[in-house]
Length: 194
Image (cartoon, rainbow, N blue to C red; front, side, top):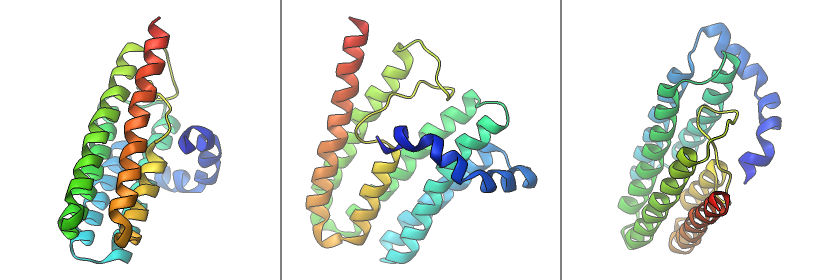
C-alpha cells in the first residue's frame, strides 16, 4: 500500500544514492545480494539479542531492496535474473527474520508459524497474479498492489524487534493483514478473469 503510493517520491529522494552507485559501477544484482547479506545479518543480530544492530542491518537491507530496482531502471530495465533474485532474496530475508524471532522468543513460535503461513499464501497469490495478468508494469514482473507490501512488512518486522513483549499480538495482527492481502489479490484476479 505504502509502496504503491510513494514509489515516485522515493525515486527522487534516493537520486543521489543512485548516482553514487552508478559512479561506483554497482550493478542491481550486486545491490540485491548486499541486501540479502544485510538481512541475514539482521536475523543473526536478533538471535544475539542485539536490537540496535538488528534494526540497522534490517533497514540497510530494505534500502538495498529499494535501490536495486531503481538502479535497474536507470540502467535500462530489469532482467529476468534480477527479478528472480529480488523476489527470492526478499523471501529469504523475511523467513530468516521470522525464524530468528521464533528462536529468540520461544513463546511466540506458533505466532511466527502463522506469519510464515500467511506469507506463503500471500506470495503465492502475488506470483500467480504476475503470471496471469498479461500487462506491462514498470518492473520486469507485474506487481499487484495490496494491503501489505514490502514497506509494511518492514514496519511489521521493526515493531516485532522493538517490542518483543508484544510479539504475539503484533505478529498475529501482521499475519491476519498479510493473509488478507493474499485474499485481496485472489479476489481481484478472479474479477479480472471474469
